[in-house]
Length: 423
Image (tube, rainbow, N blue to C red):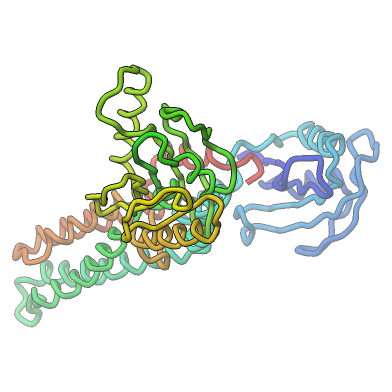
């Protein structure tokens, strides 16, 4: 396998650029550049030179002998000055050495997986951590990356292994006088415990749900103040505000992060039954589509909303009256009223996403958990030991796939393509 290298810090220019070299020739390659390397896991200042002896940079050099490294291979880090020319010169000197090449996207992490330093859930967590935009996403990614979620899946698999041993013992020793079959009630009780935990995991929203955020759609008749309210809620001018009815003809989307959660606010065309304007008619249809996909609806009409997702809002409360005491009164010149509306939106958001504590899984991971959950549900109450054993194997294979056992190359390519080159 080739020895690979790449900048694993931010791309230059920067104060420092960390160049990583990983593979069987990593230490030899670094020695050609820096001369004598420092002792393992200690930093030392060295002058890096190319094969012609020309000085490239003065850098801190660290040597990490495998397999106890991030990639499971010999690994060297060169902490360079972060100028573009410096980095390019060191890359050129490394590429000139036999057996060395620039790393592909995600290749360092992929080698960590191949060498057993991490599993597939941890690799997915690292990918999520690189893409995290909110505090909530960061916390969830850390749970996966540091192995907490993997340990939970491993515990499920261990429990199924113990149950499988009991079933196999019953099958193998069915004809022995001194070894009786295992009590089916005991088996069902142990299987039910795992099934319940899998069901709890499936009851939580998928990771993608937290990444997409909560969709908040503003609806109401034309010229009621939807665009002004959207701008006030996000604190910037995203929607055009005009006294002319029908100004908003298409959906206007804007995202905002509050308390570690993403909200996507969607301003829609004013809803009315008739319009001679074909463009406005399309906007109204798109507004209805947005309402159908909404998590929360801010209803600015003068009638109470008949939708459990809706929050009744009285817009422009400083200039118009509706007599609707159940609606939250808002005015764009009164930020206190906007804050009160946000409090209600956030409370509804808690109901949409549920308890933020505990692990969450990607949709593809949830499909594996659902497969295991269904197999275990079929197992409970089944008298045929062979059928029990087969359903248990189905569940075990599905959970093993979460950790990357028998993972296909296509799955790995899709995952590691999300990484930057030096990760």
